Amino acid sequence: MERKYTILAVLMIVLALGLVVLPKKKEMKEADPKTLLSAITEKSRFLSVDLVTHRIIENDPTLLLIDLRPADQFKAFALPGSINIQPDSLLSVTTLELLNQPGKDKILYANSDLTAEKAWLLATRYSVDRLYILKGGLNEWYNTIIKPGEISTAASSTELDLISFRNAARQHFTGAGQTTNEPVAKKAPEKVKVVRKPPEAASGGGC
Amino acid sequence: MKKIKNDGSFYLNPYLGGVILGTVLLLSFYISGRGLGASGAVKNTVAATVNVIAPQHVEKSAYYSQFAGGDKEPMSNWLVYEVLGVLAGAFISGIVFNRLKLKVEHSPKITSRRRLLFALAGGLVFGFGAQLARGCTSGAALSGMAVLSFGGYITMVAIFGTAFVVAWILRKNWI
Amino acid sequence: MIGPIISSGIVSPAWDNIFAVLLGMGFGFALESSGFSSSRKIIGTFFGYDFVVVKVFFTAAIVASMGLLYLSYFGLVDYSLLYIQPTFLTSAIVGGIIMGIGFSMGGFCPGTSLCAAAVGRIDGLVFFGGMFIGVFLFSESFSLFENMFYSGSQGAKMINEAFGISPELFTFFLVLAAVGMFFGAAWVQKKVKKVEY
Image (cartoon, chains in turn orange, red, green):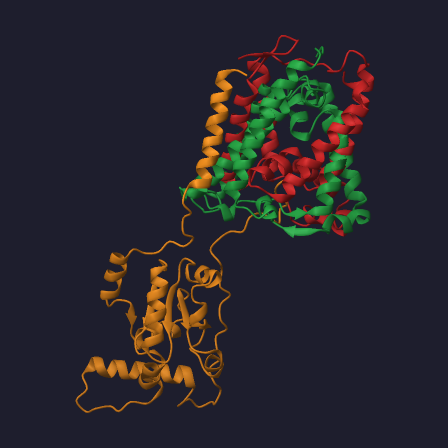
């Protein structure tokens, strides 16, 4: 056999061997610690109850509310349009796909901040972006929006604006103070679209 | 190293040809996420033609309706365009290597007519099998091997194993 | 750019068909220039006088499969987005056998018959024409084969799974096998009596 071919054959075998001995890369890309630290020290991941309420009422399409509480609590009450994800399935492939879909601000909430913080940290490590936390969780939301607040006589105009906004929001969510007793219809959770385009199975590709 | 067939034509070194083909195949996956193919284009053309002649038949058929009928456009399909490219590329190669010649290539021991009859029958049989196996040597076997598809390898082995046996049965046609 | 570049949206899908033509041209050129427009060259593998099919086919297979695995390793290709032919065991085997018969009757496969037709070989054209009839017959008689067509489904199974080894290890063995075949082919070709073709 000619020498040229022997060399080529050896080259191929070496290349193939290379594939076998190369160390396996990890599946998920993790954010490096420095990036994570700067993300943690920034406070901008907290969104106020008022801001989120405003966006809910406006039917902001970029809003994706994620409820981290147990399923029975979610069924009893949840913010309109929110979806329920259990914290222990946060890093599953389907959840991460959901979190990674483009064009959405993901807002984590639970009863208070604790669970949401943990979830935020984990997901940010896996490079999920546009991820936020509802400051104070549902407890804060309830205290601010649902429970009627007291108007102090020394309130400034901005505070009064805020209070009237919250009153309007209360009406929107609970129908309290309206003439009819119809509860506000719950917005059905949006069908979430997964990022990746599936291979062309439908067109029978591959002939 | 030149490989010269008895007709004096120049053929590329097969290993070089293989590397080129492998690279094209690789690019196909890199660009479009799929491999090359050929029989799929035939299937789409048949479905499209039948759709023009008898649209209701297409709609009712469990097979045709997967690719034609309604507002599906079987001819505007990746494979159909690719096949057009194949024709063009082969034609260019024929010009470059001076192989353009209208003829029926056959063993000197048989007639042209016999060769053409077997070509027709062979094509018919092959077309049938390609539908069953969802691919041909290019689509199922070659592209399948590129992504280590189990089905692709099975089909490849089935094709070449059978072809070997049948070639010897029909050796009078060839040598 | 991470491939496949059309699926991941880096290049707009409108380019898909343009690339199809270009890739097809590369395919056709590679096939024809290697000699696949000649049915007697193709059949030569089975009689030992011309192993061009083995050499081209397996070289392409190892180049492409190694290439994809390397690209995947360096993060240049998302392997999970590549189209992997799904396995339907029964129809893969039966269809393959039928194709094998057609192959040795006609001396072509669809791709090579196109190349042959493109350079004026009438037998290639006739083979390709015969395919239309075959496809038509299958489509019309589909109900007879429907069960077989859908049976034995194993999804997009990869061959290394069947052996319980990693894709890289399988490819390594494939390369060894291919190289072995190339040397074997050269040896056989020397021993076989000369055939006029």
